[in-house]
Length: 334
Image (cartoon, rainbow, N blue to C red; front, side):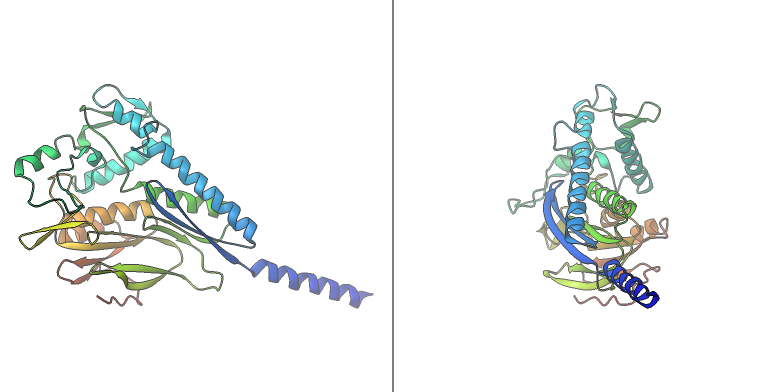
């Protein structure tokens, strides 16, 4: 009797261990926040995985409805519609995201600026440009851009844009913020592994069902159909900013679609910046800023964020890594 009972208990323990460690991966791709989201969740069964993917999509949609400047009924759109008129009360979440964006604007001296949304599009990257815009047109294009004209009231949780025609937008931070938020939500629910990839802003956690790290591919800016390298990642974020898809060339010089909001001129010198670090929101802010600031000022900026490292690809093909870059298996193939 005791032996039989022992066998039953042992069988139960074995089955529990098998079910406890048999993980499966489910993936889904959808369009959100104006771009592509690839959602991968590791769970004990397909129903749990699919349910959590649904929750991730619902959370991203919720954030989109708060901060998307192209949705006329979002809180950010209401702020923009009342520029130069009155402050608008927003959710604390939106207020604090704006606060963090303004801090980025300050430490980059305007190389990053959430009021960039007001920029006049004098540069065209659809093949229609035959000559550079005039200096006067470029100067005029940034007339309504300037983070110093954003007034925040922390007590009342309001945002006020001082100049009529001003706009704020979270195109450079929104996807990263959403992926980080969803990762935190999944971890709080006990989902131990996954990737949320929002238009290249990736938040990862845990490992693949086979126990290996996630493999993250970095695009080769000179051959976008190929990968520059594949790197392992199991807890953190990676983002890439680049000019290899949208650019124009005048007099042998390449001008990217990433515009310096302080000057109105496109970024030059770097064609790709990839940032690794704890969260995608900050990583995206850094990759966008460094594309604008260039190699030297970009590396100086990164020193203020010791938990983040980078790989830059210059227009001439040179690969530059920050001193704290620790991924030993990084072997770029240009």
